[in-house]
Length: 502
Image (cartoon, rainbow, N blue to C red; front, side, top):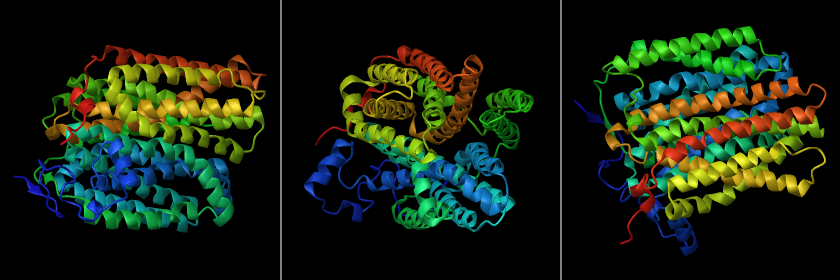
């Protein structure tokens, strides 16, 4: 027996935003309406995706803004800065472990209810993080915050995907993609600015007004979706997958440490892979698995999951290494090194108005191949960068990297759900979110490993060590093109064509 969420009534067949949001349909300036149409929306249809994108930004920003606050927080707690990594790791690990639960929770209790609870948890935990007086208190608050983040992002995406017709998917995904691109780049310089002007506690308290705005908007905008109150929970699957993800993510975090304990990394990585193998075996046999692989039968889903994961490894390794490279090889301050990353942000933003027209004009396969090749060249360019490079040229390389990064992310994320039926969207979204979180964490580990390799080959030359690391990342990025090459030329044709004009 299926019931419905509490909230505004809206059928699943109805256009996701037509008639549902009167305030959002108010008269807008012609210029604004034109911009909205170029993004793939009709005026009045952007409110709900914009709300979900805002919560994505809040969650992604919180994961990166903490880095420059570590010294100040360590002094406040009376611990060494390296011990604060536990607070960072606690958040990442909690998000990774509980993402698989999000799909079941949304279908069992209702997506609207779970999304609102997630925002409340995240906001409350942000308040507690700011009030923390000791490291254990902070870690506990970060675990609570990670639990909210694990539900907020995948459930929010599920709501939008469930309500979006295929011909409007491209514009919606373009809007949902920018938080993952922008927040990791803006986080470090923004965190440094807030710490210098108001203190480290305010990097968490800034989430309070954002959370309240999100809750208010969600109560008004989120429709009710079908739910399944009798949906069973896969306890054995969770008991295998959760510790597997924990071990793999913790091993990845450990590899990013200044002095990794390789014995611990091997133990965690081996144990995690062993549990993952047992979990996969169970998931393939269970009648109600916590993760379902049905969507993998679609090539348009497989490519972003398999080749896309390799791409995410390279794309997350690069921003991890660049600030360290600028500090150690160029002798720059942490703030200046972080500020340089805003050039990537500028490239992300500059590409946004072009992503949809380019995909519609050339198709997914062509765009993925060209964007992937350009991304490989952009990473390769960093292997020729050194302290003697001219400042404008360095800005240009960073800006170009942001351009192709944005194009590739949007194309991959849109393609993933192009052929997935609406009835399977929850399961596909949960699997996709889990793999993306895993690839994001492993990307940092890959960057750290390649950095160690560079150091071992060039122990006396810091610049050459980093240049070798970027060369290896470029080679990894090149591998991601293999899956894109296998894609058919007319892949996701319905999504590519877009909405028909009336």
